[in-house]
Amino acid sequence: MLSTLSTSDFRNGLNILVDGEPYQIAWFQNHKPGKGGAVMRVKLRHLKKGCIIERTFKSGEKFETLNITKRKKQFLYKDGKNFNFMDMDTYEQITVPKEILGETINFLKENLEIEAIYLENELINIELPIIMEMTIAQAEPGIKGDSVSNMTKTAKLETGANIRVPLFIKEGDKIKVDTRTGEYVERA
Image 1 (cartoon, rainbow, N blue to C red):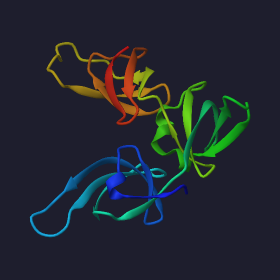
Image 2: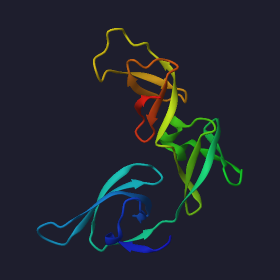
Image 3: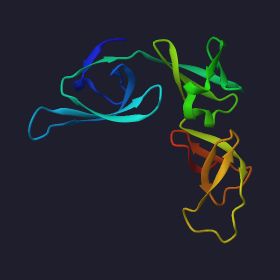
Image 4: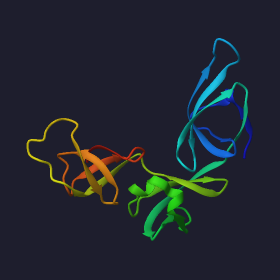
């Protein structure tokens, strides 16, 4: 823990401790209702679980800041339920259980460079590039004449993840995927 701050110091991306849990401020708004004191409406992203919650805090409430560091790693390979990474500076290899990585495992490709997020020197999550290029491993063929806009089908990526893609996408195509939402962006 570094220091304490109040709601007047809030800014997007700030890492704080709320009820003993690590969060990052995703959005905040100062609100002054007709009666009573000002409050701060906040959307918080849990640093370990990735879920987003909404909270309201009284103006002037105090919080502890968190010491978050990022280190460049390279994904090497999957070993059962564990994922192996190499530190890009020290070349040290680490093994990370599937539970820590959550949904990010759907987009991990060998040799992919990522940012490992550490809280007080404990690995809590990884950060993928926002847009990634992926190859379609399996997709049903589009039916000729199906050109109605916004029609989609399920396709399997090279990593094994299933996503919704437009009908014209076929096996072997390279596409761009938003790793935050798991959605198709465009053809690569």
